[in-house]
Image (cartoon, rainbow, N blue to C red):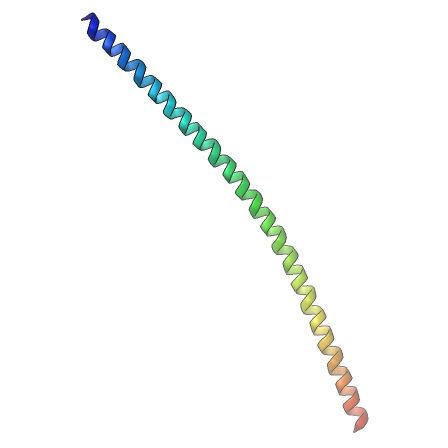
Length: 84
């Protein structure tokens, strides 16, 4: 009887240790996931900033291109009108 109680106590102790180890692994995984989530959020913020900068540059480029084309058209129109 004492042997059975000792075995039950030993088995219970082993199971508690195993569960504790599993909890530590789970906690480590959650910590790692939290860190990766934070890094991902930071990367998305940075990507958003780059995208906004790129959009502004593209808009400026388009405006300058339209302005240059308008100037060329006006020059061509003026030169064509003066030769006629």
